[in-house]
Length: 490
Image (tube, rainbow, N blue to C red; front, side):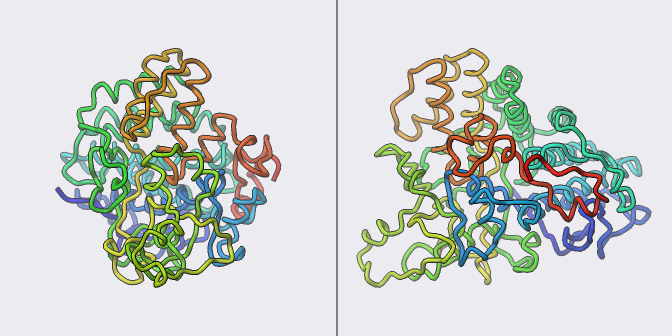
């Protein structure tokens, strides 16, 4: 079985940093359509270019945790990735490099997918339908990110948009964007296979999981229960919980039965600090590792995205997921045979004593230098435990507490915890708390709090009616000729 990797520097569509407009994809290395899409190989290269733009997954991982009660920004100082510190403090506004990167990366991915559809009729060959189905599923993922970060955004399908059109590209109501996401995913599901020979390509199960998530985020609980229930009951991919949670997030246990929708990385060199989206490795891992650390097991890093004590204390005693999710550094050092020989530094951007143990640098997993940027650790966008908990929530909200308890308790049983027997609102709250514990450190917490209406209660500084969405980057509003109104409160 081979793996599909994203090779940013050699793809014909170039990188997001190569042009001034987020919607314009005519960078230096572009081949025009007259000289491209003339062979099956051209279409294969194009779809890899679409996959490539899923690579900056570290942005979702960081923002989804740091904006919530799960983590603080950390880093060298408050001026080190200032945008993350502003998000941490709920003081972010329209000038924020991290939020601008989210917008540009996802629109570039959409543009690459649209370029395929713009030229889909140039030639026919066996397998083209599958490539187009993959493009639809990934485009849905990009739009899902955009609508949950920014709400209403321009909806552009099946064609690129030139820089001259941007001033007239009005923001589309998010309900219409969600409808397009659903349409793309339902179309893809009819074509995509349950299993693939090239690991990392979209599957029917991944598209169904994303569709169920899309429906759940809209509050369409009965529809979400139908889709997720069908995925669980059919399960021709053989999805299952990986039994040893403590080792689930090691490189050696990647692409196992728990992986439903996973972004693949390698330890090879790609870009550098000037182009993090050009990397072949997972940038989150090095950035989240222990600053100036010398000692066993772990490698040194930049101390970003540090879990809070509130999250650490939320786990029950004996829950194996606490240690697997959160490294208590001082406790780890104290347990070593030579604790006095282990050293590390505290960054000026904040310190909690905890590190994200799921996405952290380990010495036996290092990629090529600079190994801060070349971690081969994959990013799990949706894993089977998430599917089960989304299904539990959807079933509970649509009136089927029995089925909700069944799916919830599968997850708790894997963690060796007693089953939940509650019903109604108590069951619902138990499911949401289980999501926090099971998925800690994976970038989902902020969006879970927002969509369930609990963000103002849980997040310091959160302002209802404002912080449910992030601000549109001001520079993009300016590029659009002021045609895009800023989100409320910013």
